[in-house]
Image (tube, rainbow, N blue to C red; front, top):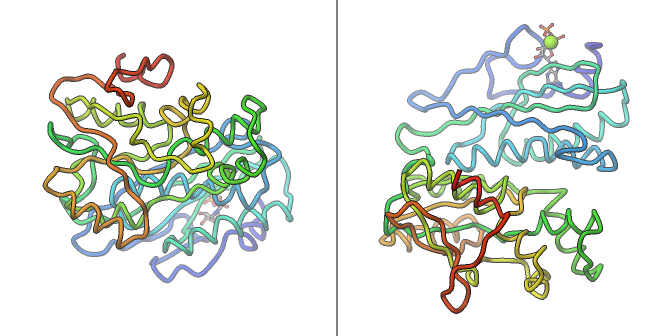
Length: 317
Ligand code: ADP
Ligand code: MG
């Protein structure tokens, strides 16, 4: 595509790179002694965002979901590349998209150092590069029996917002207005992930739903877990809908929340709470890791919930 388009919309100063946009490759000098954490996520129209979504929100989300992977690794964001396929050269769309992209990039110290631009059905692929001290990355395979299971923020808002938008659930419009930002403007928990280095034993970001994503930790760690349904944090606006199946499923198995689910030894509870306080993110203890490879959610009476189609199947498979 036209180089002036890239120059107009995707070229900013990159003082943290040896060479940014404009050559055949970017040149990056990692901080001596740090390991690089690298991740890529794609966003497709119709699957990860809807054609009606505003371009600034799409720009935000394209980077936010990638930052969430760095957060889940405890990595400090540094650089990104952006591959974008566009049906037409739409200057107004690109201006708003790049505004959304660069706003969250600046908030997290990310520099856009390269990419690719081509004509095609609207598709975005972002690669992020972060840094983490050797041995301190928050991996999925470190959970131990006896560890606590924690989540940041609240669960189910994004899935409930999507259900509302699709007309699958009726909500008071004021309550709906409180859940919708979770869908359009997810907040990656970057600072919390960094603060949990050396504290959490395992971590993942919740993109596919709590049970499915915790399931990945359990699988990789060779352990199981018991969760208390009543302990799962939700927005106050969501609580009155919790008796409905759609809501329970959103909380347990809804995707797109981009909160962190992590484990930590019970002896590190104070350190977890200090990390939460220092970063201004609420964290909630929702259960315990066990040696037996199963995932159970108990209701208020201590009875196991029937999980049905909640993402649990993936763990069992
Ligand atoms: P090449 O033919 O070498 O792939 P391009 O014309 O595709 O070069 O890209 C020119 C420069 O612009 C390269 O440095 C590339 O990394 C950068 N670039 C292209 N598209 C984007 C984009 N969407 N965001 C950021 N940088 C981009
Ligand atoms: Mg190219």
